[in-house]
Amino acid sequence: MEVERVQAVASLSMLMDTIPSEFIRSEHERPGTTTFHGPVPELPAIDLSDQDQDNLVRLITKASEEFGIFQVVNHGIPVDIINKLQKVGREFFELPQEEKEAYATPPGAGHLEGEANEEFAKCLRGVVDKLLMNLSLGLGLEGNELKEAVGGDGLEYLLKINYYPTCPRPDLALGVVAHTDMPAITVLVPNDVPGLQVFKDEHCFEAKYIPNALIIHIGDQIEILSNGKYKSVLHRRTVNKEKVRMSWPVFCSPPGEQVIGPLPQLVSDDNPAKYKTKKYKDYMYCKINKLPQ
Image (cartoon, rainbow, N blue to C red; front, side, top):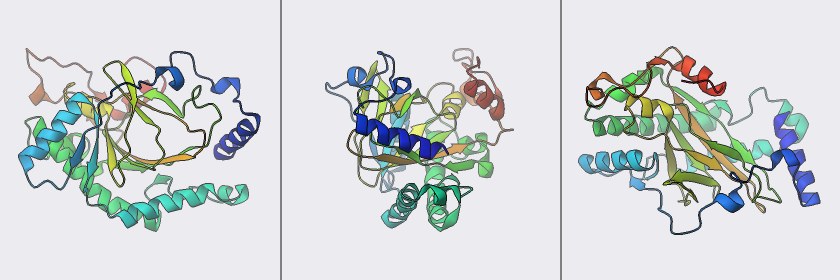
């Protein structure tokens, strides 16, 4: 089981105060030498309860254009529901190996299932609808157009748990290498252990943790639909020497058969289409297999 293998490697590495060579990143990827420690911009933090609609659209649009990532506070998901979701995930990783294997789908992993996930999902869908509406308005479109373009009520939600065990050489290793997310948007529930790093202006810097905030990643499909106005954020995840890091990303994806391309309203002679139009499943296949899009 992959979870057990990762935990076993981590435990052995901590005892030996080193890591296997296959986990050592190349020099241009190592966080110890590539993390920017100078003055860094803070990720925009947006109050999603702002009653000034024009201001909310402006803030979300600006963050999506300049960063491709932002944090939202006062988002309407009760703290106790988020705490329950996190508790389920932590408890799974504390189980003995034989009990982990008893779960065909671990609690808190896969599609939104179980009591904790169902409560979270009900609240989350409202947050995602509000984000898509404001992103749509920021493109000069009707509020429902962007949601319809990513599948409408057929938009798929996939919750995963990222588990990063302690690592004796966090300066040499990464939890996840630099990448952009394939879906429309990703909604991330972090824990309080730093580890999300964002690339901007040729620098890679640590995202500041804000208690009870959700971190919103603009994904590839929103960048494509906006014809490049909104940016799919390049990011990576680091590991920690002293603390286990966990996060709960929800990937909000179009159905596989959904055709995604630059919206016709955003394409003109002066602003031609920058991306090919194709089914989402074909986009996924190309990206996973590192084929040209």
